[in-house]
Amino acid sequence: MPLLILRRLGNTVPTIVAVVLVIFTLFSVIPGSFTSAGDDGRVLDAQVAERMRKELGLDDPLHVRFGSYVANLVQGDLGTSFRTREPVTKVIAQRLWPSLKLTIAAMGFAILVGVPLGFIAALRPGSLIDMASMVVAISGLSLPKFWLGLMLMYLFALTLGWLPSFGYGDGGLRHLILPAVALGVSPMALLARTTRAGVLDVLNADFVRTARSKGMSEYRVVRWHVVRNALVLVLTTIGLQFGSLMGQAVVVEKLFSWPGLGSLLVDSVFQRDIPTVQGSILVIVLFFLAINTLVDIAYVIIDPRIRYG
Amino acid sequence: MKLRANLLIGGALVTVAVVVGVLAPWIAHTDPVLDANLMNAEIPPGSEFLFGTDGQGRDIYSRIVYGAQISLTVGIISQIANSIIGVTLGLTAGYWGGWWDDFVGLVTNLMLAIPSLIFALAIMAILGPGLTSLLIALGLTNWSYSCRITRAQVLSLKSQGYVQAARILGYGDFRIMFTQLLPNMIGPIIVIATLGMGAAILAEASLSFLGLGIRPPFPSWGSMLSEARDQITTAPWLSVFPGLAIFLTVLGLNLLGDGLRDILDPQSRERRA
Image (cartoon, rainbow over the protein chains, first blue to last red):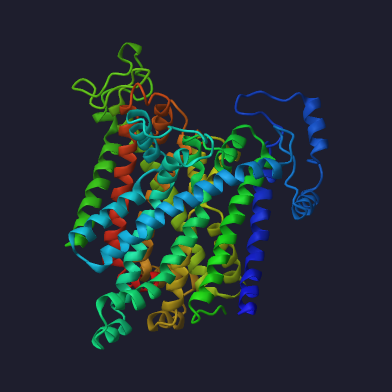
């Protein structure tokens, strides 16, 4: 088992290297993203541009720049923000906790609503509740998150006045609810669908028929056989969704002025703060990869039949 | 029964969106960009203005009708690009195998590792806002699923008799891939393309909402929502209709994709499990 886990970790390394290469290349090869004019059409003074190019080492050959980028990266140095002149790691560290909190809350909502919904639907296939939950699921997958957020904001904050409309506030639960629901609806929908599909598959499996035919009560069949076996598929979906949620949060964070990584990324794009843009993307992607790797390792522990070749 | 409802409702919604987009110049009441009239600012929905007017007095109904053109153009063209990339890579990787397969596998993993919205956002940050940038950003970043499915299908079909027969007849590799293999796996590819179109429309709306896609005054549903956010207390209808348009169009594509999957790709259940 430890060997399997090591091998799985080893598989992630080439992907990480490729990701770093892409993030570096995207913002370095294309001319004009560092010192040329911004959106407002202002052009930098030639001397200032020259000094900036020197300072940032922009005239060095690409492989030298990539080398120093990676060397810094390995030491945990993501560069210096163009805007605040602070280390990017520090800027990102301040945003990490709000982002994590939003992601976890959204995922919690998705699991608490989506899994029971899919489960109940699968136990009564074709029933009214099955139809209703699948309508909810497909609608949830088609809703633009920021629009849903806007509607929730209008209804619960501006009209009913139950919850604050935006911002982080004191970091308490009240500010968290609306953005978490807006972000959590699409993973909720996906979870409802996969739970339903997974449970239906297991209900038709031979061992469930065997359990029933030996007189096991329906409750025990579901409790002992169905839940355990459907868990793998559900866990995969939870893991994949959780990992990608930080990336999906960009629009929701922006809408609710939530001080997370997503809004940092968008703001930095507009301010042409390239080191911060690169750093935020890198952290979002690494988070995704880390969660995926954990999910794969969790499989091996939950389901000993799974082996990685 | 359920199968028909999917296809029927999905097909109807998509048809309406396409017809509205194509007929936009004839069914819109006013020009979506130029016909601003401050005398008509922020009129609620009613008989004169079906969906009301915005802060500059522009008719929301006309802007939504024209917005369908942008959404559909982005959805269709970027998905065609994704399908071409994904299918070509998947076919060649599965058929040739070897180092090319390993390389395509690595690139596909990479694409799956970077959330597509983030990737598209990075490209938009470099290229700047606009329709062309959007088509590039969204057309290059969402092909990994088509690639994976195509490759898996090639692996299962490649040993079939008709493929070997074609090889014995001296068909070239590309001829086998595109005339023998591709027609036999077109079902799942169409399903993925339909769902991908919905995803592209959502991505366009998100990027435009962030100010990185289509910029105002052009009537993208996403950029309309980003303008509407500031007026949500005084003119909430501005936020309702563009969002509804996105939702119904994407819902239509998702329902259509699900319905098509049941017909064209019956084994997909096994593959997903």
